[in-house]
Amino acid sequence: MLETIFIMTATITLISALLAITAHNVVHALLYLVVTMLAISLIFFILGSSFAAALQIIVYAGAIMVLFIFVTMMLHQGEKSLAQERHLFHFSTSITAFVLCSILFCELAFILFLAPSETLNDISIAQLAPAITVKQIGQQLYGPYSLLVVISALMLLSALITAIHISKNAASIEIKTEESNL
Amino acid sequence: MTNWLTPLIILIVLLLLGAWSTWLERRVLSLWQDRLGPNRVGPFGLFQVIADMIKIFTKEDWVPPFADKTLFIISPMIVMIMTLLGFAIIPFAPGIQIAQFDHALLFLLAISSLSVYSIMLAGFSSNSKYALLGAMRTAAQMISYEVFMGLALMGVVILADDFSLSAIVEAQSNVWFICYQPLGFVLFLIAGTAEIHRAPFDLPEAETEIVAGFHTEYSSMKFGMFFIGEYLGVILISSLITTLYFGGWQGPILPPLLWFILKTAFFILFFILLRAAIPRPRYDQLMIFSWYILLPLSLLNLLITGAVKLQFLG
Image (cartoon, rainbow over all chains, first blue to last red; front, side):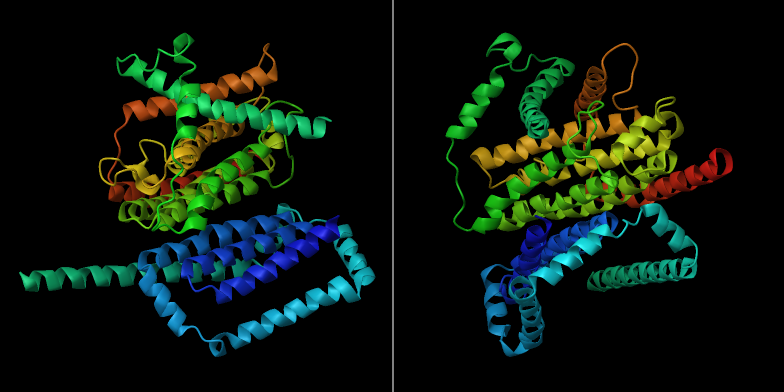
């Protein structure tokens, strides 16, 4: 049962990843990417790490991809941008992604047809591994890795300040040009 | 037997409740506005919903030729699915809960963040300016208010020491969390209202500015799904407030399920009162309110809760 779900999820992940590369409509491509994220989160869940699964959805599918789609939605011009995208898309530009994806496909085929018994064992071992609780993650984060948490917080803060600085500058320049126009 | 029976009953009851809360809202709203409301069909106008259903089903299910067809059809489904999925983790009474797992609150946050897609995709796929504007507003509003929703919830998690909702309910057997978390409750209430974009935070469908926002192009049952989805959202947020801050199904004398229903009904009525009482803010006011006032407040709430918990409760 679990193996079937895992193999289905892996297939969905790979197919949606491929479609994300090949789709001409940017919004569709991003949606395929969202499907990939959701499928990966399900794989985390199957492996017994429900916390990582939840974070995968909240952070990637829920926040980052929403922002991506938000921006592309604003810049999307319907047929015009579709045509532009078709014009820009060549097989040669996406060859690396295709190669990587096809390697993964080969692996999937290998798991499916050539070595079923070993993979079954692997999955059940992953199931037996004790699930990591949020408390343990928190203790690790604020114990041995507290410096990393502080550094990442500083990075985020600096990014925030940069964003505010850039947007403020742009606004003041705009006002100046408007004034000069008057 | 009971494995699939409980979820099925809950699903059917929720769908019926979602439909009939439209009637409730119209009646109660008109009561507060000195009108009569729908009172013709059946006793107290109760069958008005059935009449509306028949009307909505027999209308033409039209997909605009300029729309992105697949997305246009999928997006109303997403909102229904996500809202109904949210009910899976709510403990209605001891033993009446569809799914119980450790990270239920995180699951809830994931669900609420995914429901943004339905509105964004509806706005995008409609290929119309008003729908797009509405979708833009929603995306910005929901992303910003999700932050405080999460932060306000963390106060409850700190107090209960657990992410699972049944543990949170049990932790409130002596004192409701509203006593410890009044600020967190207010923050969650505001964030929840914004999350389900009910009035006064219904800017995505502000009819005076952008026609009907993201569902301008929708008709028939697809519109109905957005409509019922909104009311299901109201029920979901009300039951969450009950579970997280008002002791869930716990209460004296009356059976647990009845307590849960009573508390939830109170908050549903409160949401309707909010719609009747408070005017809609401007869009920039909404965003400034969220980032300038609610973000510092929710961080402060988290800080104080954590400090007090460490100092007094060990």
